[in-house]
Length: 88
Image 1 (cartoon, rainbow, N blue to C red):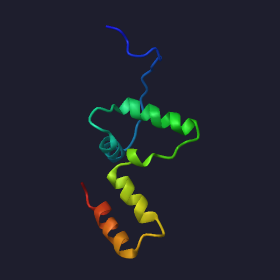
Image 2: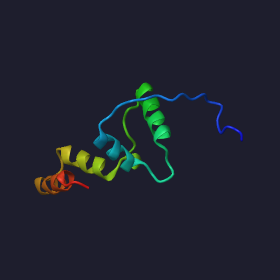
Image 3: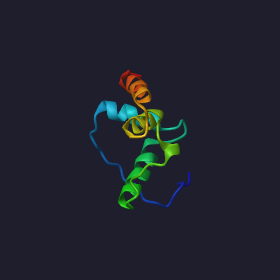
């Protein structure tokens, strides 16, 4: 079997909170791998482009971003806060 890429890979071990991993997994599409996504995020951070593209943000991330904006009215913020504080 041929390798897909010539880029040399290495396995690492990291410890993160379980809830963070669960939230991260919800951002992945069905055909995405954790490793590829984490590699992409690290690469963006190293290039100084730590900003996330809107299309890649999860619904919860988008709602949290809206809640933190100054131009969103209080009723919308209240509704967003209710949704964000409810467990999935």
